[in-house]
Image 1 (cartoon, rainbow, N blue to C red):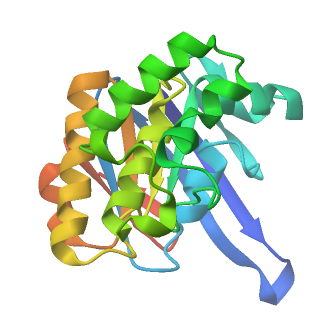
Image 2 (cartoon, rainbow, N blue to C red):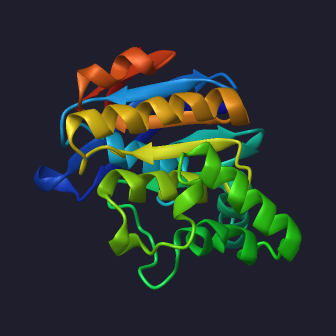
Image 3 (spheres, rainbow, N blue to C red):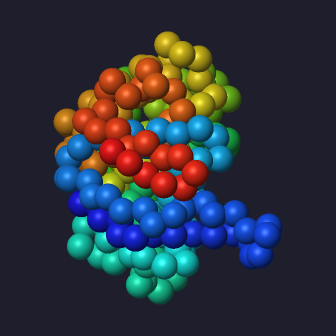
Length: 221
């Protein structure tokens, strides 16, 4: 599902250069949940941005589901993010004026899915994340954990092959964070999605199929 080969990324130049990624290589099998673990500043977000096509490496290649991300045009990257890759962010990223159901339906509106299909998928996903009875509530009427569940449902709306989660429990208390991670574990099994989730919390490792440790821009299993 994912192949990262010899990827490096440096910001700045000369004595002020920051080597965010150093010759990173690894592969992830389909239908698995992988935890990317490291301290703040270790390179987690830089790596996720390169994998998702939000940033380009200085050298190396990234292949997602048979498509070389690093070789795509901007239009190609946009299409890849609509059809194959979805994100879950620490800050939830929900649209305040929309209900939970409307937020979940946004990706399908962008892909021009038929209304009946969209409504069925939205209801299915809200029930999957345990929010079937909260469809008409806006984000400010939901708890932080509920908002993150809506964000997970939205990320799954377009049936992605790869789900990237950058510190998805960073704004949640320990119990709620663990519940969200358990939900992601369930998503792998129910939707067949491959999940790459970054975290600095060792407790979260137990739910992953595999752990990648990142330190000073270098990754080891």
